Image 1: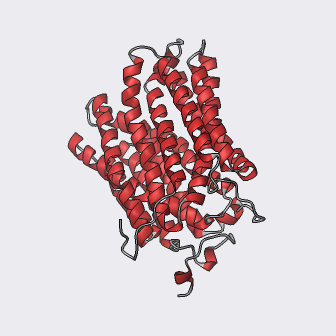
Image 2 (image 1 turned 60 degrees about the vertical axis):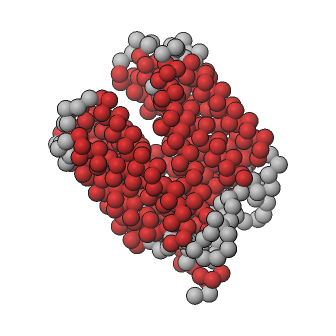
Image 3 (image 1 turned 180 degrees about the vertical axis):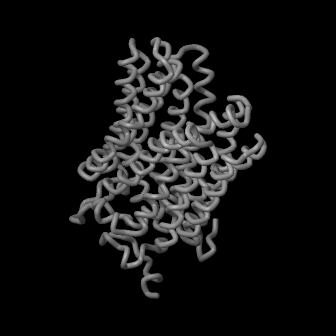
Length: 416
């Protein structure tokens, strides 16, 4: 493989592939339990609201425990927190299979949220440290793709398992997580690259990071992603397809799949382009496409138009994701101890995922779906404005944005 510059393209470290494999296992497990969880909850004679709260409790625990996860990574290093985080979700998931009441299921599932955020913060921190500076976009795209493929294929497997037992998916998920934790521990335990950073460099604080236009822009775009992709897309699209387009729930599932196809089609390409031509152009393009696709969803007069809009929105999210993640990694640098900073970055998406469905749901009830999707597009417009004011970070942010002494600076760029 060749780059447009010179020489052979640098290979990603094997540790990156270990993390990608582990993330795929985690994601496919999440997909396996998704068809079973609501039905299992209602089997304890509770209503739809109580069953939905099982899903929300996991997200709330992720959000609440994110600051602690960042501190744990700063204190103990990424590798042990990665293994412990995956193990905690494994224990929680296996315990769900043996729940005898709704409240037991709620507690077991909620506790899994703590391990989930430990895993996410630690694995992203490892990706930041292990990815070569000029391949951070590619590494981010590869990791995001592993999650996407797992989330797409997992529900298919889960739907088959539910036919046998509502408890079986949780056991399978628990076993898969224990496997991921063991593989991660076994293959990373002797890695010198994944070893904790041993120096006197202090961890970058969230206050320091918020002083950077790069970080503020990434936080806003991640908030918009959480709002639109992880919140509104799941909560509002099925209702819109049935109530406004007068189609079926099956067609809602098709629309979600079309979004995933658009996302998967560009996410790896976006990462490579951001490595070669910069983070900012891809972030701006991704947000602009997201604005168009998301706004068009609410004005779709037919299923065909709606599917096209879903595809465009998926492409926008795929273009944005690797670029914004790589920009945060550039800000931290290869030796940056950024657990709290990465935790706050993750929280911005979690907040969007929680607030987005609530706000747009009320708007859809009180006004219209068009306005609800328009407000969702507005979050991307605000992020777009922030990215227009942010500098380029490829090769290291400029001196005015370098809030940490270990930020990577490209010597050729610094000389200009």
